[in-house]
Every structure is written in structure tokens, then in C-alpha cells.
Image (cartoon, rainbow, N blue to C red):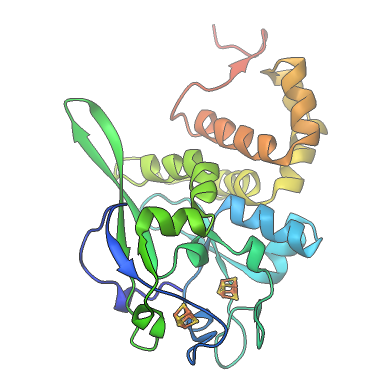
Length: 258
Ligand code: SF4
Ligand code: SF4
């Protein structure tokens, strides 16, 4: 899906126009679902594990590979490609078998999305930019359907994924600057659990001393029990606290430093 070799080195905006159509009748059908690096976000994993009806641990074990980022030392996960052709495990002769729950990177394709940190008099900002991926074998660009990047991302449902992953991406960007001490394996394991293994994180919140330590309103606690997306977003808040990026949670009396 995202082969860096074919990234067009031009920064695009939401208003950038292009022509594209991908459909089953096109002769390159499925060609983009192999030989590629596919980074998964927390929300991608949540959608995919629910789609497959398995736990987050099973999903991670069966379909992903763990990596550690050299600069931030944060853990990240890639979808594990399979077989000699290094194919996505979800591609079939009929197309994507998880289409309605496909990851954000697949939704954006042939557009790519990047974020960089800028510093100005307004302070620190995350600047989002876009680019086109032009793989020689992708014939979709020869089709006449017109888009802007904005209409494309909405049509593909990528806008929802961006919103869901916003806080998580902010954590990545803030850690991705030299100067932070390297994370220990124990810290990386906790971040991995909170970011990607939502079922284990739920047990961590409700079956450990977590709720004895942190101040949370009762209505929030009830929501976290039943609403997976709320739990995921709470996990991002907890990570900001854990990584000391922001004071997002209050400790209960007795756990506060005097
Ligand atoms: S998840 Fe679907 S769209 Fe994405 S690479 Fe796999 S088969 Fe292709
Ligand atoms: S048109 Fe491009 S995106 Fe669509 S199947 Fe062909 S290679 Fe993939």
C-alpha cells in the first residue's frame, strides 16, 4: 500500500485535485495489496479484531509484527505480509475481505498522509500534509473520476480514522524528537498494551489497582466498561500522563507526591 519508492516528492493539500478510480474490473486489481509495508494504528486494530471476531491479543499474535522506533523508542506494529508474494493476509481473488474495516492507510491509497511538527510564534503545531503514491502498475490514475484529497478521504471514510487516532498520533510526534530518554522494555510493554491490546488494557483498568490510584468520575468509569472507543481514547490520555507529556489524569489522595 505504501511503497516509499513510489512516493511523489510534492507536498499536497486537501484541495489538491486528481483523477482516480479503483474497481474490480481493472486489470491491476489487487496488485497493491502485496509487497508493501502497512503500519497499523490503534483504531485500525480495534476495527479489524472486531471484524474478525477475535480478541486484540489474538489479532496481534496472528497478524502483526512488533517494531521499535529508533528515535522515539515507541513500539509500533505492522501487518505481517504472507507467502512468497508477501501478500496482505486479507486479500482474496474477490478483493479485500475486510473492506469495510480496512486500515486507514488502505483507505487513503493512492494518497499518503504525513504529519510534521512546526514551531512558530503560536507555539508548537502538528502540520498535516498529503502526497500521491504513483506505483507504475496502478492503473487507477488513468480513470476519469475527479477528486480532491478532501473529497477522497471523506468518500473512503479515512476522515473518521484520522479523528480516532489524533491523540495517539500526537503522542508519536511529541516523542519523536531527540532528547527524550530511551524507554525501558517494561515501559514499551505497557505502551504496547495500552495502544494495541485493548482487551488486556480493559483488564488492566478494571482488574488491577488502577481505579484505586487514579481519580475518575463514576460515569466515566461506566462508559469505559462498555464503550471500546472511549476506552481507547482514555488509553491515549493515560499514555500522555505515563510519558509525562501532559498532566491528563489526577492521582487519588495518598498517591499524590507532596
Ligand atoms: S487490508 Fe484490504 S485493502 Fe488493505 S492491503 Fe489488505 S487486502 Fe488490501
Ligand atoms: S487501481 Fe491501483 S489501487 Fe486499485 S487495484 Fe489497481 S493498483 Fe490497486
